[in-house]
Each structure stands twice: as structure tokens, then as C-alpha cells.
Image: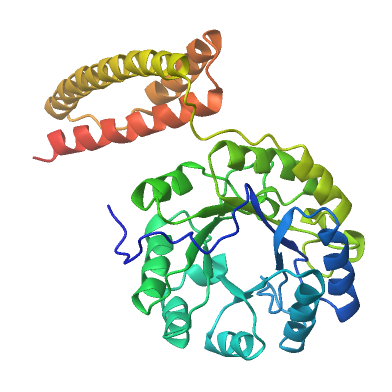
Length: 361
């Protein structure tokens, strides 16, 4: 699927840096706080855009929900003091109007808003005819169509300076991360529309500053355009998301330790060797597809045999045995348990689909 966008090169307006770093406090809490944070951030000269939350959508009431419109002037002043453009999150038309009135340079749409097409359309309508960059965070749920739809709605009203932000997805699975990275989804977005720059928000994926360096490096290795990292002058007293914010000093250290790799190599030896290895991968993939086809042919026969004998499709003991046995075999050859379990679940789902089709003709 291709995105329905009228864009030639959406990222031309971005700074010519690698990575492009957006940083600043999760929430603008006071004039002094945002000015001090900006001043410290600017010392490393690694940050290209100053961010700050003005309105904070909270899961439950009676939490800090931001300082409101007065914070826009503080944020803009902080940006001017260090010579950087400023960005903030908007969730409705009223927020957009306030930001435009206060000369905010860049807007972003948060995950809780991207999930709602009505809210995205309201923001898009408020931006009609305005030339301003807009970042769109992925929706909370792992639904790439909602992400794509938000970009399309903005582009339809004339917003050409677009970028996407990968901040992870809500998941019921236990994980070290606050939000599951599900890297395959931003990769799919890259394939669908290479012109859209994709940034990573390690702060929201990690949920803990100790994990931010690992997420940031992974994002760089996956050729993302830049990073949005929350930084606070004193995270211990932050009014929102204290655990996932770093100090400006920690930010400088984190960025200095990133390994930034080249997208391509002009070495003929490298290109030839890579092509040889990719050729082997192509052959193995063809073999895998043929093996899966053979497996499904057997599954179809099993479905026919179950139908003849009036036996249920799901055989729980057999499924448990497969999981246990295949995990053991995978461990023997160095494959991760998580990978093999996910692969088996997909195969099992397809097996059930095939048997259901056979038994309900």
C-alpha cells in the first residue's frame, strides 16, 4: 500500500545533521525551568529543536496536565535564547490557534490524538493554509493505517513539511519497555513512503532513562532521521514522566556515545560480498516458502481427516507439545525463544484457518 500523499521531499526543511535531535522537558513547568534546561542543552550543540509539553493528556484526572497557554511564551523565549526553533504537542484546534498566535515553529500530534481520526481532522482543518512543520506520533495501538491516515489528512489541507515519530505501542505483554517498540511497523511506514522522515522517541519507548541509550542506538541502526529525547534540568522533581527524562549533561553523554553508521558503502568488495550473502538469503527464503507450502498441504489433509472423524480443530495438548519441542530445538541452534514462539503462533493461526476452511466447506 502506498500513502496518498502529494509530497516530493517532505524532509527538505529539516536541519542537515545526523542525527537530528529534538530535546527539552516533557512538560514546561515554569519560565525558569524551561530557560535553564534550554541553556544547559545548548552547551553541547547537538540539539536542533527545543521541545516542551504545554498541554499534557493524562490517563487519570487530578494529575499535572500542563501549565496551559501561558507556557507557550516561556517555550518560545527559551528557544530564542539559544537560537533554536521550538516544538510542542497539539490535541485540538484551540491548541493550534494558541500555538500559531505565539509563533511556535513546529507542532506534533501525540499518540493519544493520532488514534482518533476526528481529532486529527479537527487539527488539520485548523492548519489549512498554514505553512508549518508537523510531526505525527504513532497511535497507541499498533495500527499503521491510523498513522498513515493522520499523515494523509494533514497533507490533504496543504501541510507538506511532515515527519513521523515512532514512540512505541501499548501492549499487554510483559516487557522491560514502557511501550513495545514493534520496529517492524515504522519499517513498514518507511517502505510505504520513503519521503517521510521518521524519528524515534526513545523516552516513551523506554519509560526509564537507563534504557534510552539502547533504544536510541537501535533507532540509528535502523536508519531513522533523528531522536526526540526528553531532558529536564532536574528530573527528580519533574511533574510528569520523571523516570524517563535525562539531565542535559546525561543527554550530551548519551549522544556522544551513539555509533552513527553510513547508509551505504562505495566499496566494490563490500557490495559484491553483500550481494553474495543476499543471494544465499534469497535461496533460503524460497526454500522456506516451499517448506511452508508443503506443511500447509499436510495441514489440509489433517483437516479432512478430522472432518471425517468429527474431531475439533484445536488440539491443545498437541499445540503445547509443539511449543515445547520446537523451543527446545530452536535453543539448540541459537534462535531466540521469543522469535520461535512468534513464528509458531503465526503458523498455527494459518493452520487453523486452513483447517477451518476444509471443515466448513
